[in-house]
Length: 368
Ligand code: G6P
Image (cartoon, rainbow, N blue to C red; front, side, top):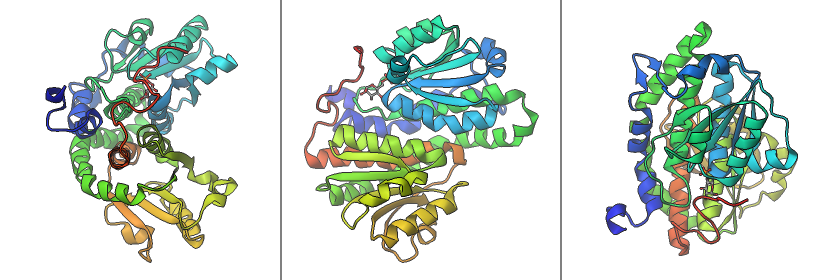
């Protein structure tokens, strides 16, 4: 086991630091001459382009990856996207139509709820697409078509490298579906060059490791942690909070910053740590005003911003700032989650909990 971990203490740590490589393998052979080639989808692209909606279905981190993909899938394809937690779709027996494209996201390809939702979507006649890390899994066998994320084996119960590879696989899927649209050609080119540069940006953001360890030591005794995001980074807030709660065993909630005034603001005081994700995109000025509102209530803020933006997000120096490299706005979630993965990892080690086998959790939940 020590050999497999190499120089790392834990699999989660190894898998976090492996991401420049895992993202490279996710994209290998699939981006050529400004085009995206996804062999597993090729025959079905025409049907997907004609569908009435895309329904993303998953659990846990895989659901969050789909949520991160939702804005760019809508933007690049023009197809409405709805989100379904697999168990909730089953509980409601929610409507799925023949004209739907149901996209199932699962690292293992064996999660019971996701597979039951797949059976349900197949019965209802939807085109079923699988996004999985596991070749030969039940998900990859039962879906009509799909994309393997090729992130390599993930051992830590808390998913890290699979999350970023899932987002990149879905970005390539969105580019492939939208490739017949002339009006979005320039945007697609930007995203493709963003994808090409992504592994080196990930290497850069991983240099925040020591800074995240310091941040973790300042949060070690906190009872709770909130994470506010919006737009492309709503999913980052949910996923960052999920990492902290599942491995560091600290109560943590990811929240839509646009909903702050409708409840969460009541929690703000000088003790509760709040991470605000405020990297550059169309929502930046809204996040600046969220920060102002939190500061005026004496909130204890940690702000994640784009490099060079420290004074734009916090002019009086009263927040702790995490500066991350900027990439194409829709790919920014791949960068922004990494400091939060590092934070969750260090918090877990400092709090003395089991990193790779968190209490009560399993890597693959194969029962309902
Ligand atoms: C479990 C794991 C999570 C994972 C979720 C979905 O809860 O602990 O890390 O995100 O299952 O798993 P899947 O294999 O379907 O992505």
